[in-house]
Length: 546
Image (cartoon, rainbow, N blue to C red; front, side, top):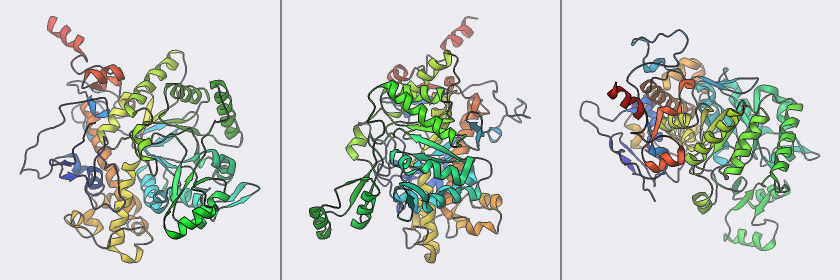
């Protein structure tokens, strides 16, 4: 098993726990005092693109030996002449072909094009309590930056204030809060996506949302995720709440209505109870039945008014991958998110997460292969987002290139949540009166923060950029978690711009598979991306023989 280093002396970062391939700790805590690369980037922004202590140090790369097949075994190509995909109004002069002029704006969709300012989106932030507690930071940050955010499954079902009539939702205050928070700062870029599973479908979430919000949202069907092979899960530490969830129709384990479970809970032998979602399509046994059922569901959603529909699938095998790409293409969906194993979760069985599913790079490489088959048949392949263990700017570029031209976005889960926690902790420490409201975890600022300052204006590199965006008077309503989201997004965006300028690609659509190569032969074999010294080798020899 590959062991990723816990510290990076060049950047001055260190992981609290054991790091995964993404660079995030295996266990990411909301109360963390630092300071992995993503954590520190949420404060210092694009400063984290460079080694620390400039003019006192020199730095050398330590990632030149590549073992195994992963996104870290892809390297980014570069060219020494030319410029492609120049934004409108730019010439190919050296004065205008500079990295700040790289455009990261893009769009996805069929009839209605959904625009975004940077090519990232959140993972599904659903019924986990972490998502609820930090939602304002996540949603306002996404709206201000201009990238899509996903409301995950079961938000309505677990809401004790939600009201159902004849089994259908008629009042959903928590879902309303989530949508309204994003729309309050929405400015034409990004979108809020509402995900549905079996229970959400039964509860009438689609009908409720379209009736109240119309085409302001995208509705998303869910097949699965990369972290686990069963439905969504949460844990609750209240016996009464567990009983409520069972009455709502969920699978609750252990059963809170059993006397022995109640006694064990009373005595403290059981301290929490898990709520599980159902898996879809268990009543179907053939691929054709799944296709018919899926097409029927999409047709119904369009009939009740949805102009934009998306699909999220997990790290199943190749048959399910092909089904998702073909069905989404044939149904003219607006977006297909493909989530590979190796990513993160709010709650999944640990050994399941370790052992189940197709690793992201393999799943994404086959996605490209299958999409090309449909393209050669003359089909307009669905726009796609890649997900699963992606956190840095190089990950974004590699994922876009690996799936080019079909991949429009990179879906990030935990990486885009970290700034929400961090900003909330800082806000709570600076203003104890709002600590509970913002779900702050700190009583005072740790040294890892105070080394940069003791006020938001000093701590966050992006503070004044956000103020310029919303105005000085409105700044008091912006949670510091959203400022941290902006700051991290600025670092990621600048990093992608630099990588794109280095490959001389000045718009997202200009990125191709030629812009990456494999760092070992095994990665070449599994991805179809040429090995470093094979890429353009024919052109090199032609020059020498000319």
